[in-house]
Length: 373
Figure 1 (tube, rainbow, N blue to C red):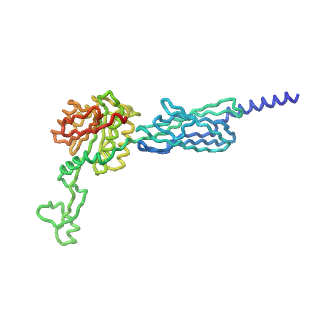
Figure 2: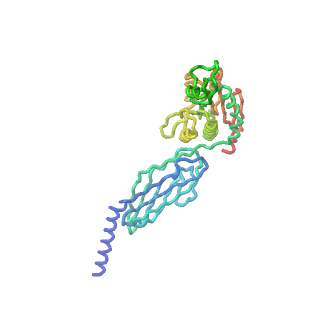
């Protein structure tokens, strides 16, 4: 009789706890998987934070948290992970009642891009580990990995002439918002320049002086169609890094910089651009734009961008073309822009085994070692 009672009690406890876990295991259970940083540069390190908060009396002796991270991230802790198209984590926790656990997973970003963690899958068991309970956690976290920046000394050697040309082309129009000082009036000055307050103080006519304005804009046009079947993806990455480096270079020179490309956005699947700006914060917008490029609309798409720039006839604009493609159909358009008095410069990334033909004076080669790819 005692054995029967014991069996009955055991069955009751088993059924009761399984029912209890079935109803309550995920109540007040908060699981989040987040990138610590919003953005970082290629090659830099950061971490993902896993947080499990079991805010109830019911303990979870085994809790699996599964999620997918970018395969290009190199994690210090490679336990509980599997590699395929992504880096799949399966972390195991034991979470007692009213307990919060925080874990950091350190990684190094190995490739430019825009990456997301789209939630997690949570699996738990009952007290006797006989029944599985699963739930998908909808939780999104994203991170930008910015392009590599190249040595500015190399960029300086290429674009020092650009800065010189821009200085020579400065507008002679004075900017009324850049006050330079006050001097005594003479007949060469317009009467509208008279500063009456300074005149009353000096008891003679005094005029305002202004700096000359430099309305020069830099517009970077990035072509990601290589017309090359050999390691095209890597030469595209070099082109994107060059674009980022060039934009940063001119922003540090206090020039307005804009960028457009035939590259397509990984999220919108469309091409786009970053309008002109001159602050160093503007570099964040440019790097985010470049980080999200994944694919391209082809050389026809780039030709349309060039044709659009020709039609717009922007004033005080210097064009920096970055393109591994440099056939005559493109160069003829650049020749036309140059004849129209526009500043035109071109950077051509090329593999060292292919060589580079400098077909125009505005062209500059950027050698890439094919064996380092």
